Length: 133
Image (tube, rainbow, N blue to C red; front, side, top):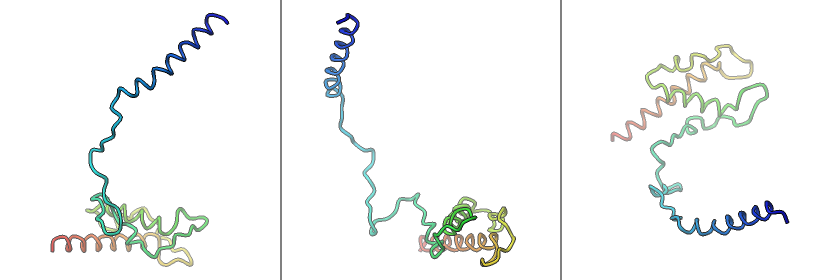
C-alpha cells in the first residue's frame, strides 16, 4: 500500500474512535426552559392563540377553480387582517376588495369582508365583556 493511503486510513480510524469519547464528555441532558403547555379540550390555550375559525365556521372549505383559496381561507384572512388593524373601520380594512357582484354568490367580495370584520369586532367586544365580568 502507498503511504498516503495508509495515513488516510489511520486518520479515519482515529477520528471515528475519538467521536464516542468526545460525545461522552459533553452534557447531553435536555432541560427545557419552560414546561410544555397542557393539551386537550379541558386546558386553556396559550395567550397568542387566536380562534379565527370560530367566526368563519360554516364557510365552504372546498376549492373552486378560478378563485384564490377556499371561502373559509379567505374568511380567515379577512378576520386576521381585521384583528391586525383594530383602529380601522371595517370598510377601510377591506378597502382593496372587489365591489363587483359575481353571479351565483351572495353579495360582493367587499361586502362579505365587511360582514366578517363586523363579526370579528363583535366577537372581540364579547370577549372583553366576559373578561371584565
